[in-house]
Amino acid sequence: MDPSAPGVYITVFAASDIDGIVAIENTCFQHAWRRESFETELNIANAGGYVARDIMGGAIAGYIVFRTFHDEMHILKLATGLAWRRRNIAYALIQKAMETARANRISDIFLEVRASNKPAIAVYKKAGFAVNGIRKGYYAEGDDALMMINAGF
Image (spheres, rainbow, N blue to C red):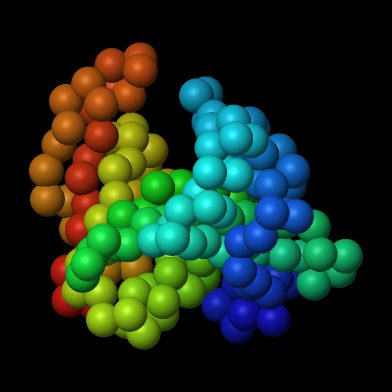
């Protein structure tokens, strides 16, 4: 069990996780990734990810997907199932990705987050991320994205 997220343990993202991930994805995002997008990530050499699983039965509670490039990591997706929110699962997944980054001598981790997504922004700030720019009209609906970075974590 991960001590920072009671009730879950974290494993490496695998093909057998895709159905559970897509179920969460569809409840969390208006423009959700399709199954094929997650399958593609599994086949990219510089892609990775983790899932948080319920210790009672192994159901997926949340996930993180990222890619690494030289000395950078780009977090592409992070979500927690609705029933699992406010239990530090997203934070634990970020911490796990940061462990991977440190082990691979990555110096910067970055992401984009919807500017109106205050809960996600709070989690990223708690993990040491800071806003370093705005992408105007980044999302399909025209919403802005905050660019956030955790440099030298």
